[in-house]
Every structure is written in structure tokens, then in C-alpha cells.
Image 1 (tube, rainbow, N blue to C red):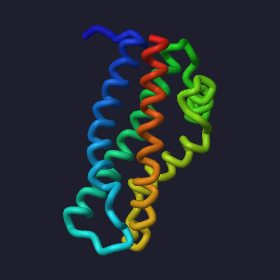
Image 2: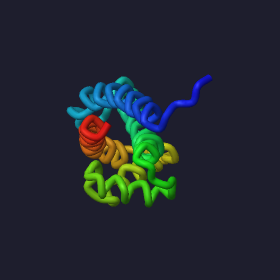
Image 3: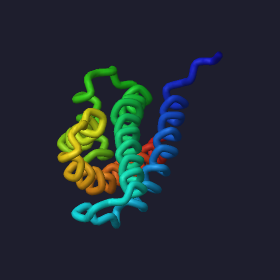
Amino acid sequence: MTRLSSTEYLTQCVTQLNDACRWLQRSYDKCQSFDLSQALSDDQYDDLENLSSRFARVTDILLNKVYRALDTAELMQPGSLIDTVNRAVKRGVLESPDIARTVKDIRNEIVHEYTVEDLKQLQEEVIAYTKVLLQLVVKLNDYVSAEF
């Protein structure tokens, strides 16, 4: 097995991110028109669960794989997630660390949420921030296309 260069690994991670985003976009398109103040059907709950799962997956790939792979490809020393996020802000692929913190917090709520009463608010946040997350991926793709 041959070892990938840092640029090849970045390309592989970006491809994985874009594949996951395609599914996230599909779920978002299905769910964005749901009226969460009304009773939802079982199918709508399934669609929202898919959206949440895909949101969490894209968040993980973007923050934990792609931004770190970008650091490595640009010969930066690996560091903490805070360091990685701050470098993403400096590159212009992320507006502020607060956005990364928010999507990461939502991701953590998705993974650890067990209270049905809090589910409505969580689903509202997922729907609202999916658009933000998808825009972050567009910025990342633009940056990688221009730099690599």
C-alpha cells in the first residue's frame, strides 16, 4: 500500500465531505418546509433523523478531517481543534470560531440527545444551521480549488 501525500489525502477528505454534503442537501431539501410546531408523521420524523445524522457526519468530516488535512497540506504543525479552527478563519474558509463552536455544539446535542421534549428545538437548530454548514463547504471547496 502506498502512502498518500498530504495533498492527495486532502483531496480524498474533500471528496468524502462533498459526498456527505450531497446527502445532507437531500435531507435538508426534504425537511426545510416542515412545520415543526405541528404534529409530524413518522416519515417526517425519519426524515429529520436522517438530516440530523447527516449534519453530524458533515460537521465531523469538515472540522476533524478536512480542516486538519488542509493544515497538513499547507505544512502546518498539527494542533488542537482550536488551532485548526483559528487557521480556517485566517484562510477565510470560516467566518469565526463561533460558527465552528455552534455547529460542533449542535452535533454534540444530536449525538447525546435523549429527551424527546428537547427534540423540537434541536431540529429547528439543525434546519437553521444546515444552510450555514453547506455554505462552509462551498467556501472550503473554493479555497481548495484556488490553492491546490
